[in-house]
Length: 88
Image (cartoon, rainbow, N blue to C red; front, side, top):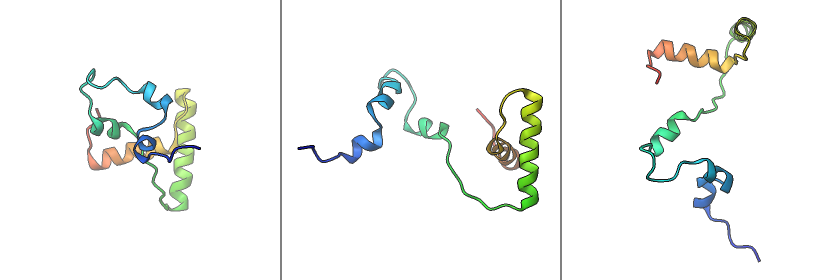
């Protein structure tokens, strides 16, 4: 018979995720610094003209740089500039 699942171990991640985590006490990073580096998903509604602009700009930058540029990267760049957030 299987044991009842433990919510804490589920939230902490799997064994593979534990292997990727640095050993405790070896790094000065806390939980807050780990959460800051994670991206969050937001579902927003925008004007169709803005949607088209984002698609075209992402394509243009992808072709110019030779590396994939996502629409979410453009939105993040615009928000950082708008709120004048200093990047790390």
